[in-house]
Length: 320
Picture: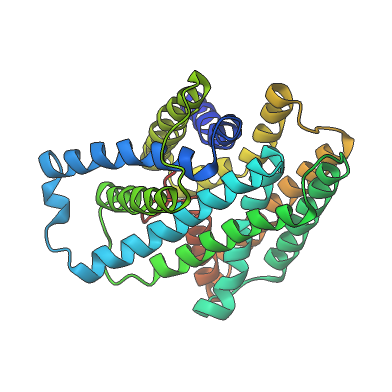
């Protein structure tokens, strides 16, 4: 059963990048994101009013404001960069790999920002992760086309947005119920993307059915599938299992994008993805080594917390 759940989780989470590619063919990024989150925010808001009032008790305006800020960074900022990059021609696999370095970067920054120990092995893993990104990005860019070179910097902005959300969330004085945090995040995203759509005149959805197929894909697979399975696996198997699965998203997305959209998946891409997975193995080894040494224990916990923030969502943490 765990294998089936894990497989479903990897596929549904990876589907978010594919859904972004589907939506990019029929509407602007803000239009797709507005219509993805607006109905979702309404549904979650109604559920909060009817079924989950207890989770809201005791929350202050400051708690809600902090979660709104976390949502703006980990959902709104992150997803906008993903969609813009893909719309500009960056392959879904490259975007997924760049975003997938977030736990490595967050783990490295845990030392200077939170005073937590980061081992030499973990720094080595970070370097390997960056090398993998460079290799895959070079393979993508070498295919030519109309994608500007600066477009490959956009996913890095999304990754940094996730890092900022991670540390903002970790400094929160109060733990917020996951259902409450997700509701606040989705409402924040709905407001943000509706405002952007209004400002840019991109509110009206296109008439072609492909747009609504993309929206249904994103809501059903990416949001309910990815988020729902995340929390189910988290309860059954723990944070480490979920975070290990998170690093499978880049190769799965790259293969999926190659099959559906003919995106590059040559030998150079395979090498880059292999280097990225090796980086994960090195970092995990560094964490196990830290667990065996009491002085390094805080680093292991910090790195795992950062890994748990590899994608947007409520505290523990993540959700998508």
